[in-house]
Image (cartoon, rainbow, N blue to C red):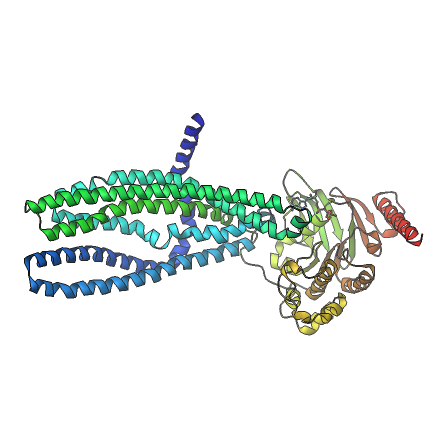
Length: 603
Ligand SMILES: Nc1ncnc2c1ncn2[C@@H]1O[C@H](COP(=O)(O)OP(=O)(O)OP(=O)(O)O)[C@@H](O)[C@H]1O
């Protein structure tokens, strides 16, 4: 019981905390402003709507009175007015639908573009720390839930009170006692609305979170489909999905019940008001206090007294639904980006350039450092190989150099200039990277190769693929360079993907070349030829090579041995072999392993 009261108090505090709403509207302000013309149109239609509401009630009452009096002249005068009102109503409805689409869908489109623009500029760590399904649900579910705070919902915040006041004033003129009695029920509707809004907001928040979770599960299931198959996880993953779906269903059901109660409450208030006005009004007619027409005008307008109140409360509920979705989007949009503009290729210079890490300290999380005061100088145009055990920080070094992460301490220099003197576009355009895992986009082979540089000619592409030893394979395909390779390049083998990545690096033609296990997926023969191509590519470039197989880096100008984020040895292959240390141990291990394999094959 105590716990429940505590929960309720926490909920009320949350509800009365308007900072989320403030954040949401700060986010929406420029997008609403962009639709200002449409909103001006909506305001115009709003006054037309109020005019039509009262005019129809007036028309209805006057027609009735004229009929009761058998006044044909009056009827003849009224009919064209009625027709005009109907025409105006049709035009205004059509315009409302059109303007509603412009404001709501236009805003959603702009907001989605803005979110994607922002997401593309977020630091890598921020994006990779969130599950991709969660991010997807911002675009699919969260932004699409914006309807409660924009378009007609926003205008309703003005429209409903205005209708309320206008109708009330008009009804006062008919009979003030009847009018006052009709509005006496108003506070009940307001209190009920506020209470249901409170419950709905909390539920809405949980529903949006659940959408995010389910989206994540679905995305991961598709991405890891092969793993699911090989570990026979189908039943497990299905049960997880079904259970999350059940939770979503329960939450949505609870929401529906709340909305149901809320609507029924509104209906009760409306019906009571209607019945009371009708009974009392009928009595006034019998006493000749008001005419039959006035009574009809009154009862047809009295709904507009209660509806704005229940409508406002309903608006409030929709508002809560939207705010709870948009605050998830605001969380992303408030994350600082690494640049103000979207990066695009920006050539710096083709000259080989030196690289220097000076007392760099870095950890993916502050308390868990990968590097502590790490320093390394790589002379311009040289090939440096980095070896060391798994987890030593080799790939992290390449991540830092490309500005994917920023060091917590220390500096990185390229050609004597600190990296933050370059724009991120310049920095990344001057580096060609062949990562450990090749990512290819769904599309054709040519489209994937064209990513390397803008305006590549077909000849350049053919030459690069020949150097990367992938041309013959591409030429053997029925569609050649136009072959679709599937999502993530699923239709290519690991070695083929790796050669595509090498071809891309050749095409990029950047002064710095990073090769992270770039030939690990190739068979010995292909590796031999690809290495020849890479060696010619390395000429006049500063190259960092990460390799586990020491046989592939024996000709490196400098070999750096890393262990636990520190340089433990540095020198040429021969120098390091003549010293006791990690390099010699790794070399001996690999050498004997190879020898054992040859002996086994010969046996
Ligand atoms: N995105 C990340 N977030 C958090 N920690 C990470 C991330 N990437 C790597 N690490 C951690 O940083 C350390 C260094 O990883 P890194 O990938 O640089 O090692 P490596 O020497 O390249 O290893 P390998 O030879 O296995 O590729 C490891 O302890 C790893 O767990």
